[in-house]
Length: 439
Ligand code: NAP
Ligand code: HSE
Image 1: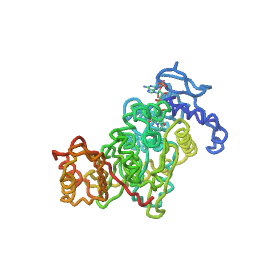
Image 2: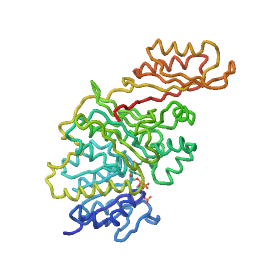
Image 3: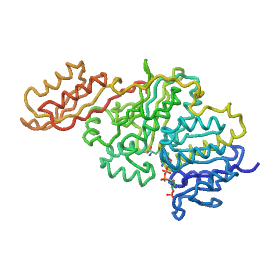
Image 4: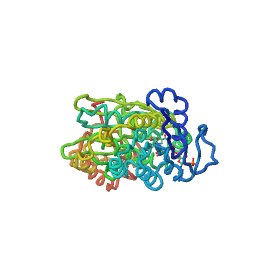
């Protein structure tokens, strides 16, 4: 049988990794897919740039039409990035021409996926996106297919490799934030705009996708509460360690009584939890189904070949399914498109959590009592409180408080009242604390 012809849009970190894996493992991949695959054209921005892969048999172009109008190309692999603009137009045009699509572009899927899948469903083409979430971990396949007998109740995961690399190095290597971020960029882990990694946007894109396939809801990126790691200070990392916790950036999705919680933010986790010990660029996702119980999925969350591993797995799936009836393929978002739930995503002030607070206050008799009274009046129980510093009267002393579980809007009121005390100075750090007893 003739090889399946593939056009790749984007030959950077992931694109080059994909060409290398396809080349190196060509025999194994052909034995699995049933047909050989051949990359014949690649769309790039600068054809003179050095590439991380051999270009044998690949014609480089800066014109998207050369891929779109090539009747021999059956599958497009989109690895340029960006929610809108070229990547989105290119994917929509590929679908219109009946070409199947494989993409690693979580921003595009999270923001425009509902439209893309509707168009793909109507056209009978596949849009595969395993590499969009957690790099090399096959978490889309696990949730969409492996756990399809379950009602998924909740999931929580470290789903941004760059962020986890930064937090790990801050804790164990005592390195500065900017230095570690620069290394993550050099290693090809970070997004083109690294604020997406450090401000939680990339994790929110991924959580949007995970929640949709876990709960059978439309993709709702704008409803995800999003907070990044840029305000985590080295002293918070040390305080967490002293208290027996690790700070991780988590994406959390949960089914609650009247809707769904979708949130990404830094989290303190007891250090004995498996997920608290996931370090560097590794990702891990805890998924709880009613039948299977808790499951934990671990692997490299970014980088050329781990991500290429997922891209190539999608290519194998697409090639195997080329001749199948489109109506009998696995639905893009796991559930049949006409069977999605319209239960709402709840606002963040409705969640329940424990909290770590770090504030600075004047060391004066009665100040601690004032702080604990504010928390007590709002029915917030204190689990631990530590006053740090040398004890000099009238000095500014750091105070660390760990609370028991309360509703987020209670904590918001407490923070507003604490900030308005004349004896409290500067910004109060609040980090949510999850015990993750289900891991
Ligand atoms: P990258 O290294 O920056 O590569 C992007 C590629 O797209 C480059 O080859 C670039 O061409 C090409 N490109 C960009 N704009 C273009 C334009 N206007 N016209 C033609 N070509 C254009 O990015 P990457 O890290 O491989 O990421 C690609 C996608 O995978 C993104 O959606 C990213 O979020 C996703 N992803 C990345 C990772 C990772 O670990 N890096 C993991 C999972 C998912 P030139 O080379 O000529 O500049
Ligand atoms: N920038 C992303 C990360 C790439 O660091 O996780 C993988 O999606």
